[in-house]
Length: 149
Image 1 (cartoon, one colour):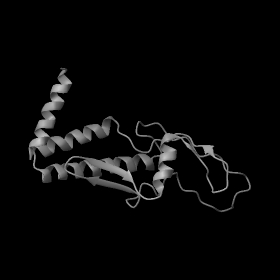
Image 2: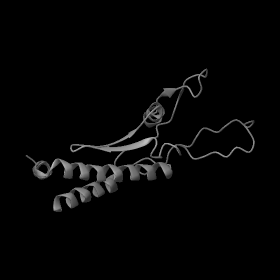
Image 3: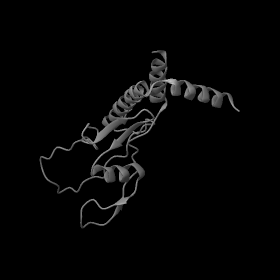
């Protein structure tokens, strides 16, 4: 058994000794922190690993005049679409409603048609949700604070 597995087992035992309400509170804090970090990544137009998103395809020259474009996924990072949920056993960040399909297509770089009657195109992969070293450290801090209480 590796040293890391031993530490992981002991940490799981300590977390298991907490009451369900305190585990749920800890999971809620983790979910809120995760959602905030994912919202910041989307705002900065970068993947969780820090690489920038591939830019949008250039629009035709004869597009509408005076139209101001937002950055990609501006509405997705709002609390209406990106939900943080927690139970005593897990913390979950998810996209709700009809935007799940769009998020799925962009996150994995799948085929989709931009409009109802257009041809299917392959979208570039733009990971919207994920963990990096910084957020993992934040999660560890929340767990340690929860165990200290």
